[in-house]
Amino acid sequence: MLQGMKDVLPDIDGIFEVYGTSAFVCPFCDGWELRDRQISVIAPNDVDLHFVKMISGWTKHLSLLTRGSLFLSADQRVELQRHGITVYEEQIKRIESLQGYVNQITLSSARSVECEGIFFTPTLMQSTDIPEQLGCVLSVNGPVMKINTDPMGRTNVPGVYSAGDASGVPFQLISAASSGATTAAAIQLDMLDAEWSKV
Ligand SMILES: Cc1cc2nc3c(=O)[nH]c(=O)nc-3n(C[C@H](O)[C@H](O)[C@H](O)COP(=O)(O)OP(=O)(O)OC[C@H]3O[C@@H](n4cnc5c(N)ncnc54)[C@H](O)[C@@H]3O)c2cc1C
Image (cartoon, rainbow, N blue to C red; front, side, top):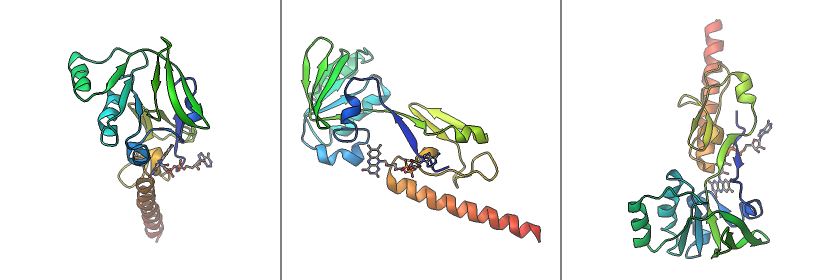
């Protein structure tokens, strides 16, 4: 199973137009291009809040949009204020953009946030239900649904292997390629084992 993941975007008007051009999910992949720019982190919960710290290494012009969620504790508010991060706790009305490049985010109060780049967390789903049809065990960890494997890429179903994003390895090309190589080795070892035991 090398089917990758399907990114399910949050239900925000205008996000589809900017995704992959000026709205991203991985600071390691896309932080450099947005260094020193005006960045908005969309984080409606505690788990996604870690993005703020990660992006703060690329730019000090940061705002946090919680999409109407009031999850921030008093300590978190003080911490964000200390780092000069503006917090907007209203619903997002629309992401305004031109040819994929965000220029502002309009809030439900009609206020708007100047913005040149966005980071957010999508929900990562398996791109097909083939693993389930085959009887593979899947697990959900936060926004990620992955196929469970052993360290060599073997699923619980004999003869079915998985690698890359689908198995929840760190979502990077090099990690996907590395797990593909490991899984290929496991497949060959298992096939040789089967042949060997026939004699
Ligand atoms: C916007 C964005 C930017 C990124 N930027 C970077 C970056 O800068 N650097 C980096 O290292 N990583 C980046 N990544 C992550 C990287 O793309 C993934 O980690 C990597 O592509 C995973 O490889 P994979 O082979 O597991 O899955 P994928 O690359 O998703 O490949 C899976 C393939 O399987 C195909 N497929 C699915 N179902 C079927 C089926 N039923 N039959 C036939 N084919 C099927 C899909 O069409 C797809 O081609 C980025 C991801 C996104 C979404």
